[in-house]
Image (tube, rainbow, N blue to C red):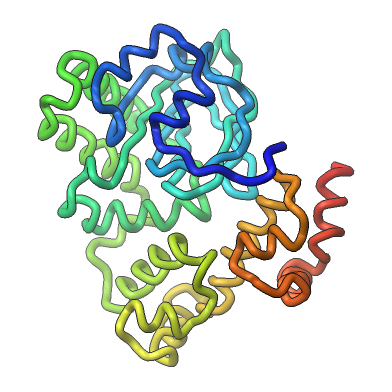
Length: 302
C-alpha cells in the first residue's frame, strides 16, 4: 500500500498506471479536460489494481458487457452490463478487478472546464455530482442503456475524428448523455425550492472542503446564511443535521485512509483535518463505535 493517497491529473495518471500502448495517441492531443475510450481497449494496458488515488477529473464508466470491481470512497462496487459508476473529482477510487476477456464498455473522463460555466451550474449536474458521493452506481433499463451506448459511441466517433476541435458538438452530446443518465425519479427534481438549492450547495461545498472545514459556521459563511438557518434548512431537507453530514464525510475519508494506506493514526488524523489525534480518535469512535486502530484491525482480518 502507498503511504498516502495521491491526486493525479490525466497526464500523471497515464504516466504512472497505463502501459505504453495503442491508447498513447490520446497524448497527441490535449486530453486534460476530456477524453473517451472503449473500456476493452484500456483494460489490457491499465495496471489493475492500481493504488487508491484521487483524480482532478470526473470519470464515468458504463459497461455493455462483462463486469469490473471498482472501489470508490470506502465502498466497493461490482459493475455489470447496463450499469455505470460515476466517480467525482476528488473521490478516492481504484479499479480492483476486471474480466479482461469479456468486459466491454466506455470510460468517459471530463473536467469541469470541459462543461463550461453554464453547464456546471445546471441542476442536473449539481444533483448528480452530489449524489455520486453517496450512491455512485446506477442501473439503467435496457432502453436507456441502448440510448446511452449510442450517445457514447457518437462521442467516441467525434473525439477520434477531430479531438477537441469540435468542442461544441462534444459538449452538446455529453449534455444529453449526462441528463439521460441522471433522469431517474430520485434525482429528477427540476430547479428545486430555495431550501433544496441551499442543501445542494452545502453538499457541493462539503465534498470539496470537508478535510479542512469541520465547522457548521464555516459553511454558513460560505453560503451567506446564519448557522442556525443552515442547520434548520439542511435538517428539514435531508433529515440529517449539517454536523452529522460533516462528520459522516470526514469519517468516510478516514476509513478510506485507514483501510487503503499505511499512514499512522496521527497521520490519518492530520490528513482529515484534525491536529489532535486523540480528539480524532474520540470522534471516530463516537461516529463508528470502534476506535481507528480497532477499525484497521477489523479490515486486516477481513
